[in-house]
Image 1 (cartoon, rainbow, N blue to C red):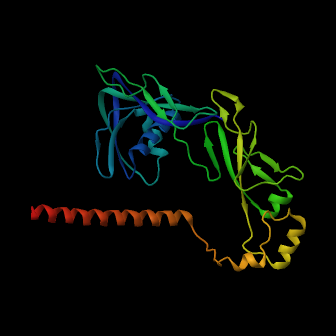
Image 2: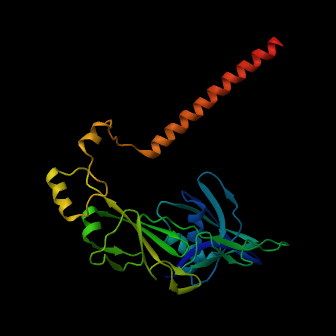
Image 3: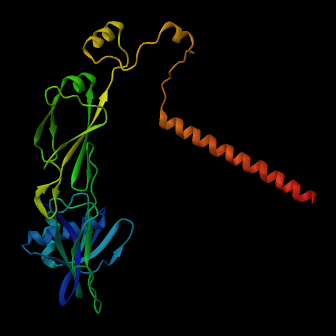
Length: 296
């Protein structure tokens, strides 16, 4: 898909003596004023809008010069919340030409990729005109992550689905519905990845070629099981890997209790404690060193 973004970006000086109309706009931003001027030019059937340099810009008012042919449109089709004061004719020789640039974002373009318009920057007398460069910034998607030409998708399965099979419909970025299902007898393990060829991002500049779509599976386990459920599972699942302990072996063991823990939070807490202990140790050694120096 090709996206076209209309930008008010090209301003070039034109040497011509013609009557211009001075207008003062209230309650509008500079971008809104420029948009209205370009709309006026399009309404008159012209490809470019001409105006002089911005005469003044204060807190709530912007004064510019526009072509007389644009005045009719501005006076009859303007934003109701804005106030236009004018017109008054002024003879101008240096005039801005405001052009509309179309930025074409092609399939597969990467984040940070640049689109250049050579020689399209602002012009001024006796200066070299530079380039206009657009840098693409990729918007984050709530479900998909892009890495190069590949897409990554997170999906959570229940324990039953991971053991007994699953199927679900996946909405792709282009609106298509993909049927995702496991093979008969296949078991999906926690943190396992599966790949679908040619369902990733288009590869620029060959949009008919695509990367891969990776699906990262996480498995949601039940919090508890009843004794009856455990016995039922033992009849169908593979046998336990560890042998049962004898009574004598149990007597020689000390009982322990397993607690739930957030390992990331636990590591941050330990790191903070270690840093605090290090600072206290530095203070103690520094104090002893100062006392020793005083005795010498």
